[in-house]
Amino acid sequence: MPVVQTKGLIHFSIPVNDLEESLRFYTEVLGMQFRGNVGANGRCVVVDNVNIILVGRQEARPVDEPLAHNGSLCHQAFQVSSADFDRALESFKQHGIQVDSEVEWRRSGTFNGRSLYFFDPSGNRLEINDPNPPYWPDGVR
Image 1 (cartoon, rainbow, N blue to C red):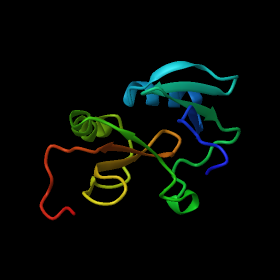
Image 2: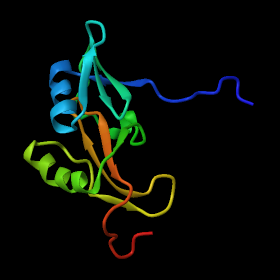
Image 3: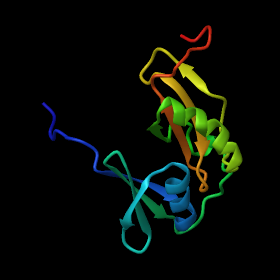
Image 4: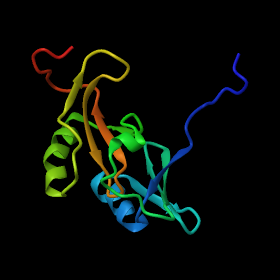
């Protein structure tokens, strides 16, 4: 029996270099809703009843810092519809959003579907995932 049984996620934080630029990115590009300020150095956005606190760093981290320094597994993943996933492939280019890799396809493992990894304006690695894509390329396992 666990010491404490958690019942859900209330919020998590993402450190950012520029609060207002990041707030625009998470609301205007990723479609999250602004919930309010959290103290002087935080902005809360919400998606599907999960609060994300964008926390301004005291010292900006270089946006192009290699993943080796912060780990490729350290990222936040957001579920999207198939239509939004397809739209993101084009929209990210138009918005100048740096994409980390080609679309990844997975039929087995912990998280299935198709994923696209990209970076927010502060260099945080993010993922969008479509768990039920409308098609599968040949050879995907």
